[in-house]
Length: 235
Image 1 (tube, rainbow, N blue to C red):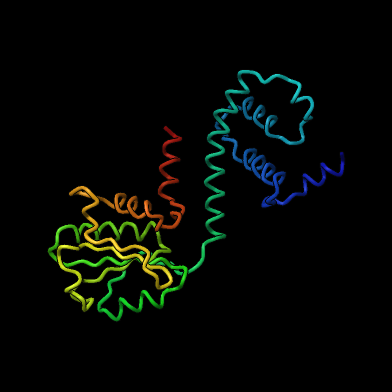
Image 2 (image 1 turned 90 degrees about the horizontal axis):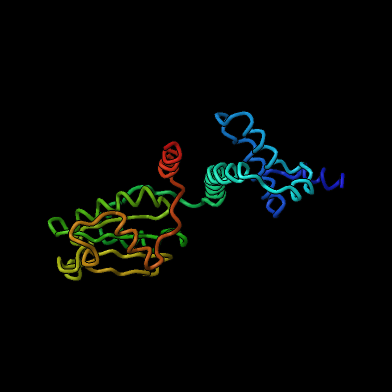
């Protein structure tokens, strides 16, 4: 029994086995108990979270209504913070490849071909073909400006239909057009894409449309979203 307790105590914080995950959660919960909670409640939460308490005694004792309420309230808040922290750490470990974070203007057909053929094979490339004065093109550019900051590993580009050198193929009737490539392969060819939206559309509409086809990667961890959640908790 003594050796197993020592073993549990010596487990690193990032241990990936079931026991390690449970211990990570317990440590996090103990460390993050809100100091504004009254001392009596804090002590009760520590007792419930401490893995070194006598297991038999805890299991044989019925949980009081007060304990149940505390578990519901504290665990929900604590678990949300813990999940957020884990997501951020996971993203930092798995994040790789170039970051773009803006929409790139392509000046010619050669630049268009180059970005398709020479970009890293794991990089998703989204190209918006537009024309000044064509309905929906300016709004699409604004949507992609927004999405480029939310999906920095995706290379968002735009090119004027005339600059492609194939203006006859991209008449105003088929604009705005979105082309999606990966490893030089065309994954999506969406002509007159705004026909799928209401007259007034937003970045979330374009995002939802691309996600329907499974074209966008997992969204990056958003600090803004985390702040909004925290604000919600305060309320």
